[in-house]
Length: 218
Image: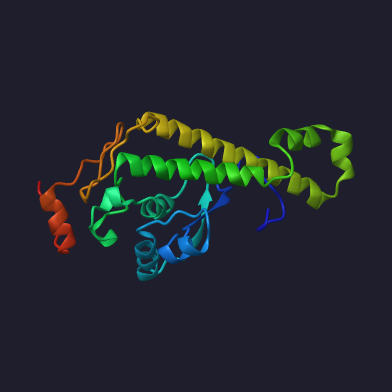
């Protein structure tokens, strides 16, 4: 709509930006704001983002049934706890991989919450927009731009709902919808969840990778 002035019903390139942000819950922030719990890793997370050139607030595009890997990597960092690091530096971890079951569950649940928040920002529901479009008499009274805006708004809500469905399915399929999930406990090898085909890194592969050496153990 923004590029061409019209909205297609089933455009695979339609996307909605979902905003994710780190809450810098440092000791100073927690002390100055009653009710805010300190994150012992907050300053490390802020410093890590600065070191890799990332902002503390980032918009990621979500498509009909998928979302960028970069968003998962960002959120894996955000959801790290001391039970994951056990004194190790955040830079020791590979955020392109699942850190731990508990971390991944927190990541996916945070995306669910972000998408639900985006849906709540709309003044009406997808069904309301559908009813406006179905009412031919009313719809014709709107200007062309207004009609395209209604279609685009409905498409955005459809897309967000499909993203929600994909997230909830992924949480179930990976076995992350249960209590008592494990943290990394200082392991930088990553975790392999149910249904994933990627193999877990070995300690040797992890060391070679950190040394910048090629990893080919076949």
